Amino acid sequence: MGGGHLAIILPGRGYGPQGPVLHLPRLVLEQVGATAAVIRYPLDDGQIPADDQWELFHRSVHTQVDALLAEHRPHRLSFVAKSLGSIALAGLDVERHLGDLVEAIWLTPLWGRDEVRHGALHLAIRSLVVAGGADPMHDVDRHDEICHTIEAASLVIEDADHSLEIPGDVNRTLDAYAQLTGAVERFIGWHPA
Image (cartoon, rainbow, N blue to C red):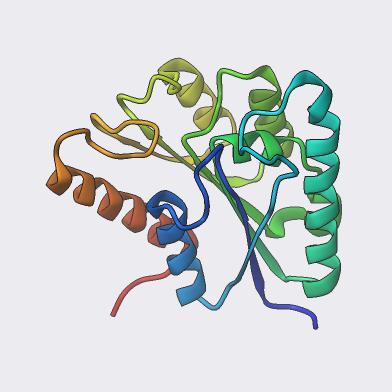
């Protein structure tokens, strides 16, 4: 098998691909013909790895990504990384495989971690960055700095938390998901009829 569009999903801590913040971008990518694959972390409880587990975590992610690239040999590669997934994405070196055919959707990224900021700046790939304005993990200054430096598209959803939900308001949460979906559609280049 070779060519085509591959989407690699890097889930969050305890936030799997069935969650709307990952599932909706996946649906958009599949609508444009992408094949989606989910990376599985070598952690039983879905937690942030302990200090002595980071090497295993990164090695496992690298191995799975390399296997997917070898199997699919995509002409376009989209990463969708949520929270903990931003740590995984920041640790990858995919440019050596595909150059400018790589893009990333960073969902509630952990810009407070040095390795995530440095990794995003090093990768410097075409990016969309989505954050919740009320997410305690959201750092406005670092978000703006990184988006400016790598010329990323940006969406900050007002009053949204780390799951891009508006606590206590289901209708505004649905609107937040619609904003997310619209941003991904524009980024990917899909336009509904």
